[in-house]
Length: 313
Ligand code: TA6
Image 1 (cartoon, helix red, strand yellow):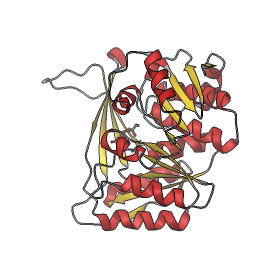
Image 2: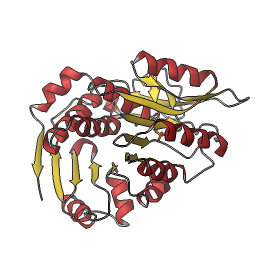
Image 3: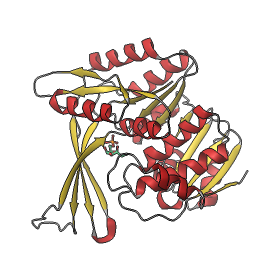
């Protein structure tokens, strides 16, 4: 079973504009509410690949109930811990999508600070649910929790239960999380530079960095490179993933789609080349989707024909 954890889920309010002009009055053409928070997306994307998952996380107030309703409408098994606390509401993120240039700009609320007693409830729930062989997916912002070691705590507890852990975090949470040696991490190019502690200059630098991490205890390091595809270390192997050409409508959420396909491939027992072909095609289909959630499964299948995966090492 796959469990996704979203500490800071969100309603993503997507604002469609012709072109955003600073300091001017910008007229919104259309607004769409969808889900945000990364773990929510991974669960929805897994469902679209016929892989069941259970969504764990923390929701607050009326917005939190709205997030749960939206998740359930996607047919996901939702086990969010919900709290009604005066003045605390799950956050809303705002995404400006412009027709001109197809720019997508996220403006995310921080979300209310979660006290440690709440994240302790989540750790307790996770320990009651997770079994040996399960996958725990830790992804999304965690700057809204008092317990800054929460991802490390969840990783070590889940590993002690015999589960694999997938960590998709950034900044201090990524560096902290590396110490607990999750099974899979999904840094983007900037995050891999952060891990390497230097500015990487291109593909050769990325491959050399991944090779230097061969024995770091993390089985899969999938570096996503937005429109340039990905470079992925799997054990001692390194793959270069070249995406099919897509018509980008909204690139936000593609990373969640990519990681969901790797998890789906692991759950289905697919080979890594097939898994990565799926991952880049699903991420491409997600990029063509005007909202941040989900992807068109038929389009993903179509894109797969032009996706190329090369084993470099
Ligand atoms: O990855 C896409 C997304 O989930 C958006 O939908 C938006 O909600 C944002 O990321 C949230 O990211 P954060 O790092 O704030 O959890």
